[in-house]
Image 1 (cartoon, rainbow, N blue to C red):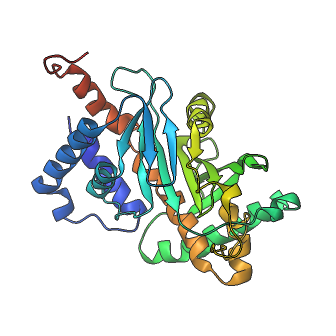
Image 2 (cartoon, rainbow, N blue to C red):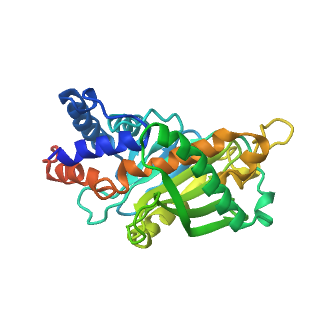
Length: 305
């Protein structure tokens, strides 16, 4: 049952720059993977309103569950990913669903992000900046013996809804020099801007599946609402922090280059690397499907509906 999980652990660690060691494949690691996954599904919320930190709420759409922050982080760490302080949780279908997708939810306390640059950005420039940033990171990947990445093109060119302060965009990526007909990795990104920063909901998937899985992501975004006092419109210029970069930096690091904030580019490429967590390793959310099925088979406690 756990063979795919172990394989995925190795793939994940490699993608994020951690060479798989003997200890990473030990029985202790296997037990932690199992324990972390089971804990995640025990803690999963299956209906109602999800609280995304102190920032927002999200009404769970039908056919969706939510794994809270603590259990989600433990799960990611079990698979070799470092702890992510911005992670709010994970969304996925319930155990008995035929669907198979995964969405990560994060909150970045960047400060209020001015969105005026969305009026005149050049999507070709953004794409080239994204490619340049990825290429810069490839030098480090080469040093570590990790496969280099390349950005093929837009799956969804950046679109910003100024009325609701929401940004959607997506790129297609693959191993550098890989076959052109390979089922490329896709990270479909959505951002909802607030007073203190932004919440991102990111679908980890592949090119062949993005059209079928995108509606689940958009449904989550449509059900997200910032709390009173945390909304974009609640910004107070006399007291609130303003982000050091604009909206374009959330796409490809354009503002980051101008300001020397290379960490923005690095953060994007790291996120791009996270695709190996679930997107292609064992077929995306299929890694967790084993445990969704296991949970569905467990007898319900007395009085459960």
